[in-house]
Image 1 (cartoon, helix red, strand yellow):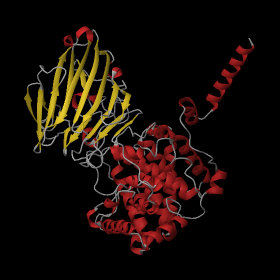
Image 2 (cartoon, helix red, strand yellow; image 1 turned 45 degrees about the vertical axis):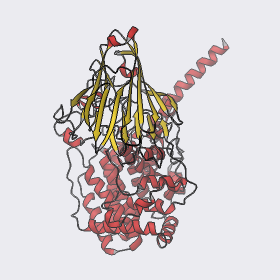
Image 3 (cartoon, rainbow, N blue to C red; image 1 turned 180 degrees about the horizontal axis):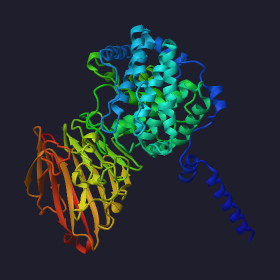
Image 4 (cartoon, helix red, strand yellow; image 1 turned 180 degrees about the vertical axis):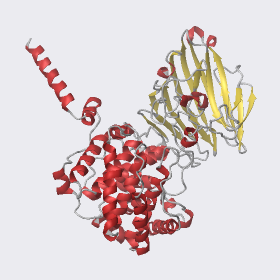
Length: 631
């Protein structure tokens, strides 16, 4: 009886705690999300905030060190010359206007962030009054906008960061009236709309890049207006420290960014800038940089780029990386000393060849200056990362003459920017990407037609697009039906070694279509890949279609097909069912008018009627192997 009373007392106490706890903190308790340190209050802010500007990424100590290294470091000098060239180009452009593209002002906000990063850093170093005058004009122009488009809060966040950097880096030299106007605008058009409960504020505890970007912009604004409104500043920074873990947890457990490599560049860039701002302003990043799996994501970034420079472009990832050095990856190099993350040769490209730099290029000069090399790590030739969109990579290593590159994935359609691509893969060999992912396409071009791109229910319009549904990916399709949108395909086995392999449980992907399904990828030689599916059919199973997406030419042969591209060849062998014929479905022109057009795109299919699987169980085994001389 006493135990029962104790249990009830604990239960009532727990209910009280949960209901009395702020929602963001309560969510962290319920879902066991590791928290950031959050001592933020008005008293903490006033006691610990750096007393003078600059304090966003730069402070007096950091700037002194940067100037010292800039005098003797050829790499920094090279990057700074590129910034100076960009600054010259900016001054030849008209001032920004409030012109939206569809529902977004984002391109304007991003241009402003780019301009203030470049002009601001060049002004800090050169103290050129011509550049100062241009910064002043740019700030006045955007502060005169009617608003910064709070209905799409990324626009507000990037604009707020831009104006905050301008005021922080050039503020004491700007006209006092400009500084006063800018700070007032940061409060009224930047921070305050983020507290509008009827507005677009789901990002506060969101799990995607919006969380990282929007909190970063609000933190920058809060630091800049801290003297004018310390209560609002402390409240905003405290909210961010509670809210950011909801997005940071998505890097776990191994560092995979579920939205793909280019979105890693976007979301992570704002988390990196935020960490740098915290360090320069407060002397601590409150645990952001050491958040579980955050630093490990640098390896994911490295592995996401194949030898050709093309990404493993799953989710809404872009197709190919920029030729310039990866400045966000360089932050991880500065923190770890690992030269794998510091692309020295790319940073030493001729400044004129670098073109338009990243919109955080000015800030990046700081962590480029902070890099001190240590013993290099090693990029594994086989790697897997679990999480909401699990990924596996096989490569041939740094000196592989065959340029072997494989990426495979689990996941589900409901992950942010996700597709119905569980079990899909890409494969490159000898400089040719034989198996492709159809990648991303312009959001605005789709949205302006009225197309509902962002709904993720089972029957939502998003899944009409070839690059979003399973018909456009190298996976399995059952009964010609869509994948189960919330059915998570997860990695259940992974082995490194000379012949690495990874197995996915795809049973949830085919709920109601198959009793069970698994897919195993094996690198069985330096020039081949084996895909093996173990299936158990159900009464609902009628047809299983094995799919491969390619832009190569395809010739059917006995037992499979020969793929040809750029003077190279790849053999597709149906090892389990050599008597089944291969079909080729042309996807250029596209099957749906809104689909992304990819020249020469086609889908190779092998169709397996359910009756082929004796007693409802069976195996599909296909091997892809190079056919060039010496293989």
